[in-house]
Amino acid sequence: MSPSPTSDLRTVRSVPDARPSRAAAVSQALRAASRKARGPQRAWVSNAPSQRRWERYWLPSILASFVVVVVVPALVAAIYLSVFASDQYASEARLAVRGGERPQPEMTSALSLLAPMARVQDAMIVADYVQSRGMVEQLQDRVDLRAIYSRSDIDALSRFDAEDPIEDLVDYWRRRSEVSIDAASGIITVLVRAFTPQDALDVSQVVISISEKLVNDLSDRSRNDTLRQARVELDRAQERLQETARKMRDLRNVERVLDTKETAKVMTQMVADLRLDLIRLEQDYEAQRQSVSAQAPQLRVLDARIKSMREQLKNLQAELTHSEDIATPALSEAMRQFDLYELERKVAEQQYVAAAAAYERARIETQGQHVYLATFLPPVLAEEPLFPDRPVLWLIAVAGCLAVWGVGVGLAFVVRNYVAI
Image (cartoon, rainbow, N blue to C red):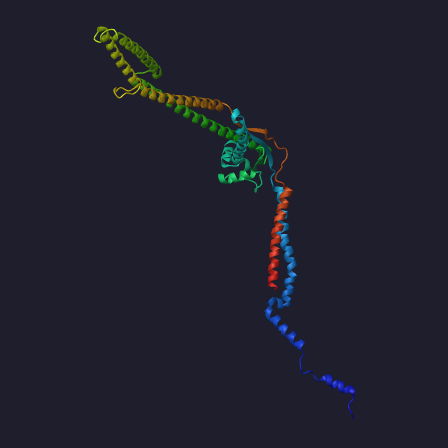
């Protein structure tokens, strides 16, 4: 009996295909390469119960960290700020450095440009001094700064330890005082904080008093230096003038001439007169020689007089100007020395007059106050505390805690993801 078609079909299906398909081989090779690239898996990942335990404690751990890092510090800060933090009172004052100098008209334009810069510089000096150690030492001497900020009723975090050194007191004072400067106007704003209204007012008033003394001392020192320098220049000019006067006196004694100009004028007149008389005598001699003999007594007398007058004229001319025949110094050389000394004397007189005028101006300026500290907003007694700003401080504390908690949680997520790879 022949087999049926149905039985032949079953026989064909039951025979396995001897040739594997190409798609199956490729899929198997890709799976092997993927396992090789991933490497060995973490032990805890393959351990399903451990992984489920980690996932179970992850969220409670984050919540617990939030409570510890954020909630508890926020509650502590709120309790401290609302219950324990001491009230701080502020006393504000506004000052300005002003100058009372009156410049000369020719210097007005230049000084008008330099004056604002000088005032801002003085204001910066005052502002820097307010928070310096010198200010703290003077405040300690006048109002006992340690006792004011170390009272027993001040909270522990705000209280200053009276046994701490001066450097710590300076740092503490800088936290309790604020100084600002308006660059455009040079106005100085000083804010002093204390734990009682009266302490804030007292400290602020003493700060202003010390600052005024500082400005006055700077002004006095500058004016005294100017006066001292003017005095030195005046003494120097006076000494030079006296030296030139001594030189003139010694030269007059040596030359035996009081006034070379007058002496030269007189001698010039004498030379002119002698020349005129000599011309007359020579004319008379020539006129008489035409009528009498040269050996006549009157011509001999005239000739003797002419010779004598010529010798006198020669001597006078030698005294006026240099001559090789006469060894005595000429008046012209003395006049040159006198002219040099006279020029030196005039210069010394001008310098002395200028130095005396400068000294007198410096003396007058020293008697007035040119730079002073004007307090147009004096400190007043505070009626309510302005510090600490509790809501702002609490928000800052909470924000800081949140930032720390966020950074910690972020690092935990990074570690978790790295371990889970």
